[in-house]
Figure (cartoon, chains in turn blue, green):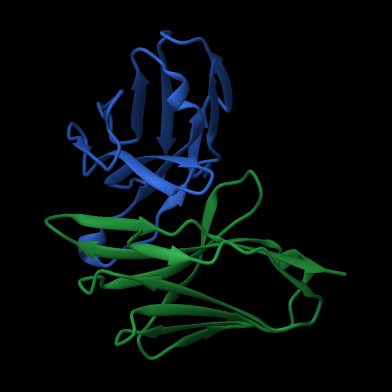
Amino acid sequence: NAGVTQTPKFRVLKTGQSMTLLCAQDMNHEYMYWYRQDPGMGLRLIHYSVGEGTTAKGEVPDGYNVSRLKKQNFLLGLESAAPSQTSVYFCASSSSPGRGYYEQYFGPGTRLTVT
Amino acid sequence: RKEVEQDPGPFNVPEGATVAFNCTYSNSASQSFFWYRQDCRKEPKLLMSVYSSGNEDGRFTAQLNRASQYISLLIRDSKLSDSATYLCVVIRTSGTYKYIFGTGTRLKVLA
């Protein structure tokens, strides 16, 4: 039982390059989330998904796209990376908050630097 | 003003000390409250939920004051291993469930 895993762990991109971050969970959770964490800003929600095939915008969605083709996977894409996207990216999953299952389980993070 | 605010610290305390953190929230529609712990360069992990009646888990006590809109975390008999950043998390619903994370309070327990 690996929980939530993220690939890659580290990446350096040049401005304008694209990349995809992969998140996988083996807990059969319906909800999945992508956050970014920057010093002094706390965790900010980029996009989230409440089930396979569905996605929704969070607090800071600009410059990112997501897809949830399979229940266990949630992909975050950067089409044209900018230095402002330098951050630590965390994926999380949870069961249904509507049924009282609030705990979010986080992956180990991806440290992205855009030069 | 941020919706969830925490003193960033650091709080430097000796081993064995008692330390308390507060977290204030501004939206009265907030309905659920949690403390997460985040070690340096690691992911956040749930420490404990916070209930209106207050709750305790070993050396950790969490309390909620809805009237003043703050939650607190008390750590007794601090251990070196308690050194971490403690994140306050508030959940409210506005069509969907929104998790609002505080920026965290850093604790250093000194030998």
